Amino acid sequence: MFLTFFETFMKEIKRVAIFCASSPGVDDIYFDAAENLTRELVENKIAINYGGGGVGLMGKIADTVLEMGGDIKGIIPVFMKDMEWAHKEVKDMVLVRDMHERKYRLKKDIDAIITLPGGVGTMDELMEFITLKQLGQFTKPIVIVNTNGFYDPLFELLARMISQKFMRDIHTDIWTVVSDPSEVIDAIRESSPWDSEALKFAAVQKH
Image (cartoon, rainbow, N blue to C red):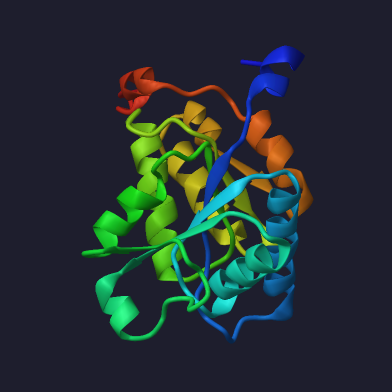
């Protein structure tokens, strides 16, 4: 299903959630992608929800938003705050009970999810929202930034799920893949429409 130019133009993006790594030891190519993405978003007056961390790609995102005078909200569990993992300069920092509530709050009032490379926490967030979208419980665009081919093995696995009938072909419309942060905003605007009727397609039919 294709969007008209008018529909694409009118798909206003006010706030996004970003899932990404908190590890400080990753290659600079991932930090550069996080910074470039953040600059694109702030320059387009798009606010950001993120996981509240002060280091890794999370820290780079927060530092860049603060440097540019943008709008960022951190959502972090109390136990992580107690470990002093929260960014100390982000004023809008929401403390939650656990990881489950964190994911719930990250999706609040957003127009899209953007996923950068990350570890198991990032994968948990991404896969939960892919699942929710498959079930029609979440309908916003999900854009995966495949920096340095990081997510290639995941896409191979998802393709295998589809080819072996664990998912349907239509489920590839759940997510959009880009290789460069400069493509993210257009990818959000041009993403395939999705609604709660997707639940009808969640079950894979027998041969």
